[in-house]
Image (cartoon, rainbow, N blue to C red):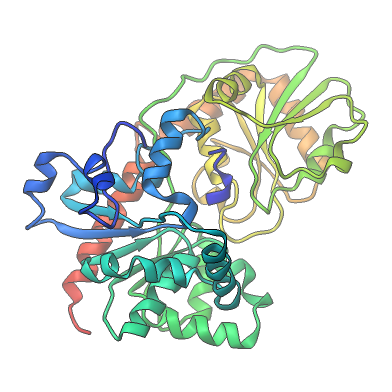
Length: 402
């Protein structure tokens, strides 16, 4: 999910070290400060490259491309829901320090050094939120090393997909750490179901990921034309670029534009109707959506709803979507909202492209229903995603115990 971002600024944020001048510049509003004593103290532990101050800087400079919240993944919205929110701080590393941290991450499968550097903020929180397994396993390790009880919501993305490939020692280590996580959350019913089998004693919940849904572009009927403009984007490891390229190769009425840095160059060599570039700004991304007849999200087998971020961005941009029905994405949007195809089937992709080109009115209806799910009904979006974290945190803190 995370790597799906082609990816705040105006919203102030706090990092873990609240005494520093840098954090004073990014502190929450005065009203937020006045409510701290009664507010739930949420510490959000993110990856080194998702440092909240750096996120804000990149968003302000335009380096974050896509639909992004002013705070990383929208977690700062919890401030408006009665929480005091602080974020992990990455700080600067010299080459030796970075090598040391990455070495331990490779050995342990989690960024324990980064978590250790933020141990004071971890211990001072009521509850810790994390975004991927690398973070919650590391936080759990810090708690184990210090012999302290840390309340953790551990969100997994790739762990279940990669579980079978892990060594026995690493599986044992991860089970030991998972035992100290209060709740494991998953974005997809598929990895949720597998996790229930792998960790029968764990408290496991399904929490659908959502991006900011407040701003949207109304779907427009794409006119019939001789050329079908297909847009594909994303860098997730489970993109099935080969099937998509096979579907459009040798089809002069198809024009495929891929915004990605993960497409093998040899795959698109000498394909005159395929262009592979990167979106350097939100204006470029917006124009790509505006010019597209449809957005295609081709996927390989996965369990974690790969592609769901791009699907939501396309839906909010008002563009019809064709996606591979795999990984649990159909738990977010129904067949009345997204045109699904089976995995690894270029002929099915071509049929979906032709259907949308041939019947733009039906495609418009699908796009409108999909967008309504992210706005009018509010099933999906950053606000719902963060609210679920807040509600779950209150539940955890009511359990008490050790």
